Image 1 (cartoon, rainbow, N blue to C red):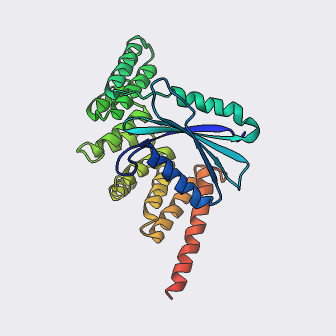
Image 2 (image 1 turned 180 degrees about the horizontal axis):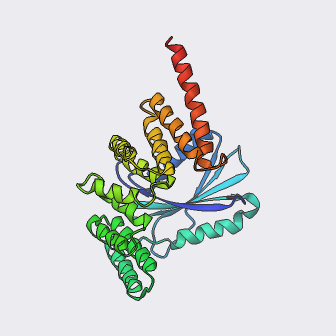
Image 3 (image 1 turned 90 degrees about the vertical axis):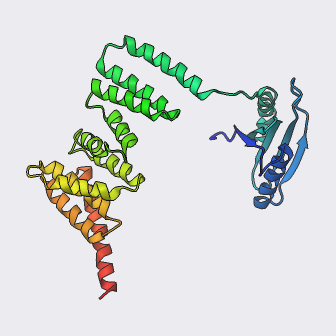
Amino acid sequence: MKNEEFIYLNIASYGSEFIDMNAVVDFHERETKQAHPEAIFHYTSSISRKDGRTTKLRTILRKETHLHEYTGFVDFESFCVFCVLFTPEELQIKNIRKLEYLIERVVPININLISSACTEIATLENYLSTAEKDQDKAEILIRIAKIYCEIEDHEKATEMYQQSVAIFPENFGARLALLELGMGSENSAMLTEAFFNLGPGERAIYNELIRVYSERNRAQLLHQYLLNKLKETILPLEVKGQLLYALGELSIDVNTSEALGHFLESQKCLKQCFSAKHDALKSLKKIIRTLSNYNKRFENRHE
């Protein structure tokens, strides 16, 4: 990209939008002419393939740029592949050869995802059987679990994550994955508690909890959970400060006054734990100033 010479490849499937390769070519030309009305197009079919598939080579010259665009197309039964080359004029001969090489040799293959996944899992299970350190075993189990997630076997993925946690209980990634997989189930509360207990004073814990609950439209449940935590009789100041910070984040889109109150209380707690240069305190200072100004403007408009 930096040298202004690159190729990218894409696939256009035939269906309701494109009935064949010519429809894809025509669409590209219309789109280009809308943005570059004076663009010049030139087509050839000089690239031949051993399998006899139809090919097309297109050149686009745009008035606005010194770069030349060359696109090679190959027609397959239900889709076409096209490779787009951008190249400065002085390098076009060398780079067009590369484009032609791709168009002459690109072939379609079918990949059985489940078969591939099983092969990869078997390989990882061999590594697991020879691993000596618990942390290594836990990491391999996470890798296996992710593959199960990719093929949507969530039951097996959960089992692998649970085995990983059994070996290495402080496993952040596995605990988080179990929470994501189990959100909405009868185990949600237990999984949330287990993840929270990994580091109640760590900002990363709250960031992930907010993300997971918000993505699933359950932010209000997390809000109540954190409020309950705040009511516990003995809380280290750092934990209390982080709880209040998270409550402020959860409240900011609902009630800015409530959010400001949480942030101010959080600031009081964290000032006793960190230096003024700590990221949390610098962030709080900025948030509090922004919310205070917003609330003042809102109050002035309604007086």
